Length: 188
Image (cartoon, rainbow, N blue to C red; front, side):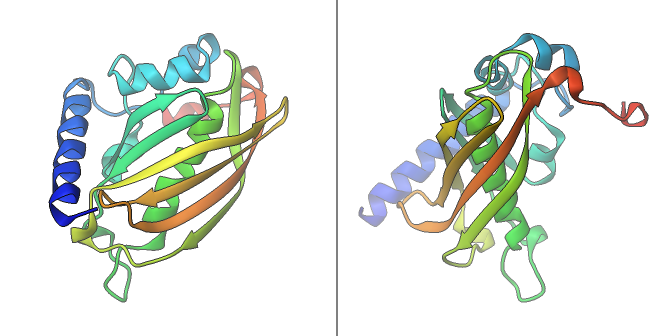
């Protein structure tokens, strides 16, 4: 891919994200428990992306956003910045890991029926190159490997607009009934 093609793709990514962010008029908030119980994972994620449900607070805190979702595939777009630096002057691996954890776990979530939830029980991340504040935007694409009744697995890749790989990951998620999930009432 030429530099011009990468710049064009980068601008398309930024415009696509702006359009999605513009749909979000409410402040970031956890998805209401009733929506978790009544919607399939795919419907819930689409509703978040379309602004019908609030974006999660972490998307605001770490500057990344859900921009594509289909059965078994989810894409988040993030903007690394200097506020995420580690002590040696590159973007902290925790930012990269969080973006990858989000895309792979949500890929699993996109395959779940209403009333089912998930939690990450294992995340394996391989860092290929340093992420710097001027690297972005970056896209984390998660794809399902397998989803059963209790376990889901997925893989993800973090790439820039030119197709350069920065990190990749795999996950194992535990699948459970939403009715078994307990929320801390103090955080509401």
